[in-house]
Length: 115
Picture 1 (spheres, rainbow, N blue to C red):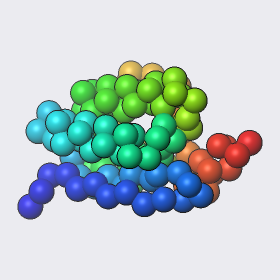
Picture 2: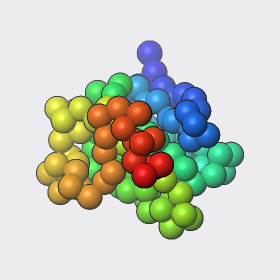
Picture 3: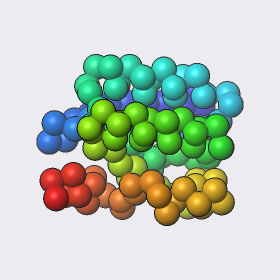
Picture 4: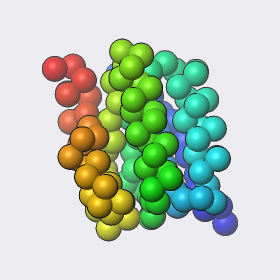
């Protein structure tokens, strides 16, 4: 069984990356390459659906921060949705949960982009 699966959908012209599994050293390269490809193919607007993430380490969080900065730097919108605290504690431990654009639902993220 794969430790990580990812797929992309679109909502109102924004790419939504659905992530299921473990985000750690064993999946870092796969995660990084997928996000790079999505950004190259679809532009700077991106939503990461982390509802299926069962564990995230600091390296994965670093990649998320990198893509957030890259997206915003290119004039795009970036958001995280469906973040589950028990599986993503590193966001709170580092204080990034207060800085990263996080929303409960895709609709909330899209509304924030439109606002």
